[in-house]
Amino acid sequence: MSTSTYPTAHSVDDFRRNLTAVQERIVAACLRASRDPAAVRLLPVSKTVPEARIRLAYAAGCRYLGENKVQEASQKAEAMADLTDLRWSVIGHLQTNKAKLVARFASEFQALDSLRVAEALDRRLQAEGRVLDVLVQVNTSGEASKFGLPPEEVSSFVRELPAFSSLRVRGLMTLALLSADPVRVRPCFVRLRELRERLREEVPAGIAMNELSMGMSGDFELAVEEGATVVRVGQAIFGARALPDSHYWPDAPSAPV
Ligand SMILES: *Cc1c(COP(=O)(O)O)cnc(C)c1O
Image 1 (cartoon, rainbow, N blue to C red):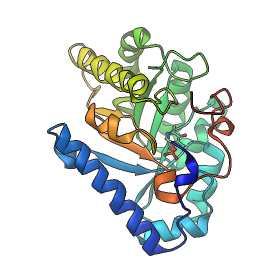
Image 2: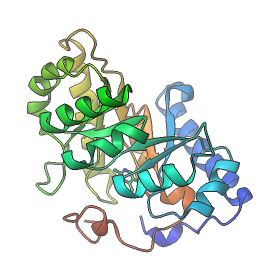
Image 3: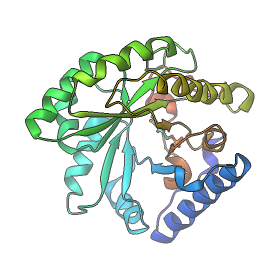
C-alpha cells in the first residue's frame, strides 16, 4: 500500500477519526474470522512523531505507544512523564548497551531475540526493581535482513528464559514480508500462529505463549484474521512518515516487493 494514502493527523478530532477507523477495520476482520474483537489490542506506533502531536493522540485516548528506537522512545517518555498513565512499548531491535534505558521507562519490549539482550535487560530491571513484559521476535519471512530468531530456534531459546526472573514472557512478535500481495504476506502470520501453537505444548512454567504481535498499517487486517492479539499501527493513525521504511529497517527493501 502506498504511504501517501495516510494523511497527517493534526488535531484531536483527526486522531479520534483515525483510531475509530482502524478499530472498525479490526472489528470487521474479527467478524470474518469469528474472533472476539476484545482479544485484539491496538498498539499505536508513534516513531518520528513529535511530542505535540503525540499529546493530541493522548487526548484522543491513546494510553499505550510503540516506538522502535530506544533513544527516541526514552526521550519522549521523559518529556511526557506528566502523562502518568501513558505506557511505552519498545518494538525495535535493542543493543545491550541500551538495556539500561529500556529497563527504566518501558513497560513492554517486543523484539527479544538474543540471550545477551535478555541477560542485560534482566540485570538492569533487577537494579531498577521493575519487571518487563516481553515478546520474542521471530523472523517469519526468511529475509536475511530482518531481525528475529528463525522459527526453528525459538523453542530452545524460550526454554532459557525462565532464568531471567524480571522478564515476563508473553508470546511472539513478527514483521511480515513487506509486500502488497496478501498471498505472500499471510503465510508469515500463519507461521507465527502455528509456532505459538507448538510452543504452547512445551513452554516451561512461568512462560506464557498467548500474545501474537503481528500486523502494521498495510497488513493488520490479514494479521487479525490469522490470530493477532496485538497490531502495531503507525501511519494509519498518525499519517505517512516522511522517510521510507528502509530508514527504520536499514536492509528492508525500499519499495514494496
Ligand atoms: C514502524 C513500525 C510499525 C508500524 O508501521 P506502520 O506502517 O507505521 O503501521 C510496526 N512494527 C514495527 C516494528 C515498526 O517499526
